[in-house]
Amino acid sequence: MNSTITNNSSSIKNEKNEENKEINHISKSLHFSEEVDINIFAYSVEDGYNYKAYVDGFNQYSRKNNLDIKVELNLMTKIILHIPQTWDELIETSKEIIEKEKALNNTDLVGYNSFIIRSKNKNFSKEIELNVLAYTVDDGIAVKTYIDGFNQYAKDNNIDINAVLNIMTGKKFIESFDNHYFMIESLLKKKNNKYDIYFYDITYIKNYSPYLLDLKDLIPKEHLSMFDENILSQMCYYEDELPSTICLSTLYSNKVLLDKYNKRIPKTWDELIETSKEIIEKEKKLNNTGLVGYNGFMYDADFGLCSIYEFIYSCRESYNAPFPELTSETTVNALKLLKKVKTEV
Image (cartoon, rainbow, N blue to C red; front, side, top):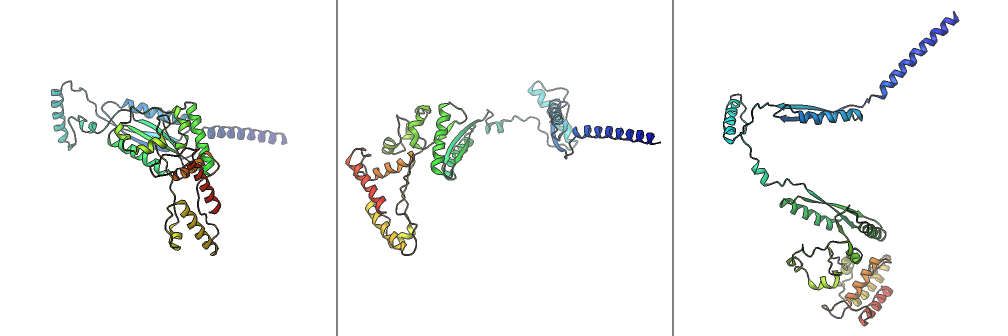
């Protein structure tokens, strides 16, 4: 008796194991997520074989890769047994079909669509995509303006070129700026074709110029004549190469504090020193100890030299005078004045 019970129990266990194996086998081959149905509508004058091939191919791929997406093709067909071979035949055939269809309340048929109107306003050539790389410490509004303006111009004139802007930003200005410089230089040296246009600071025009294209034959002389020749000749050229933009620095004044103490915006460096000293001393008495009299944007990096050069240029002998030689007395006096600003303000 005990032996029979044991055998039956063993038989039941074997059956259960087989069932579990079958369930596991089925569950591995099934996805229980909800299948997505995509409905497609197509019209064909034939049997729609080309559309069916696309849809069947996708559904086969979807099944193999367990994508849970199924495409349903809704095909509208109308078999044309004979295609007109001449314009006269097209006219006669179209007239006959249109009249018969009108009797069936189908009044929207067009006998001949030349596609002329639409083709006037559309260029069917393949659109060229230009990848643009730029670095900015703000939201990049200046560079975006260039790109948006170009894309609008291309669209308005059917040029079929689209510029895609890639912006690098950084919170730590010095570190990110240097990283941006080295990254661009590395891409240019390796002749990497990832980007077509680079927006860079004119500080590095000497480093980048060997890798850039010569655009002399592409830019009209009338275009360059719009800009101040003094600025172009003194600040922007390197071996006849021009940058895409000119970087300008501006000295901002705290109008609130100037008005508070009835002071005008300083017009000379000596006036800036005197005004700043007076305001700082008076604000200290009000426990405002965080004021900076002059922020020259001069930090320990290559880009910081720009501010020093700008300071020297501001000390030139006259408004129309060129940039002074670095060994000149004008430059020496400018650096002494810069030290005075740093010491007293």
